[in-house]
Length: 207
Image (cartoon, rainbow, N blue to C red; front, side, top):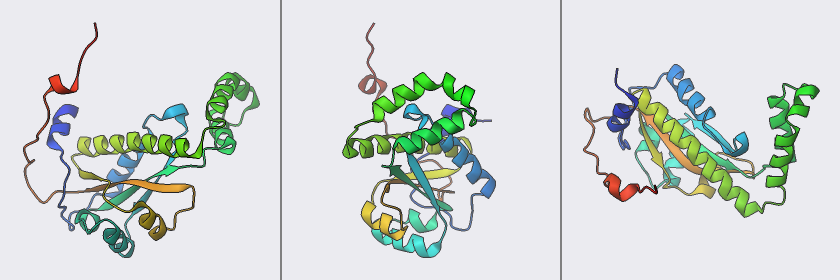
């Protein structure tokens, strides 16, 4: 069995998928679970993912994404969206889940809850949108890693009109599309040669 790093070397941003070779619902569920388990600031998961299978919707999205081939040929198109409704209500919901709706457990979490509310209170809408988008990208990275681990091909995508996609998917005002993850199986049998900057360019140490 290939190691995690070997699988990361195997993956690449797949531009052409085999439409007839489909990712199974079971493997899709594994990818979604990995996304759900991604770390997020405060654990608030300020994002939402729309899994698009409808050919009609995909055709409209393709037009809003400059006709990139991945949109129609992939098995599933995951649209990562940032949430801008990080309000006291969502924090309440988080602690209801964390405490199993048990008042005595909620008391133990009181300090954490106070800190969270203090950090989020008064945060400007623009900053919340940016913060949420960055959390969505962390989740996207976990989706990419899960695909690699499952030997499923994928392609992260930013080349699209967010407002147009939001309209096509009829997203509520507090949900904004920020990135796609197309998943499926590659047409090519081999992995194209990777080009990466050397580690000396990417990393430095302070000792």
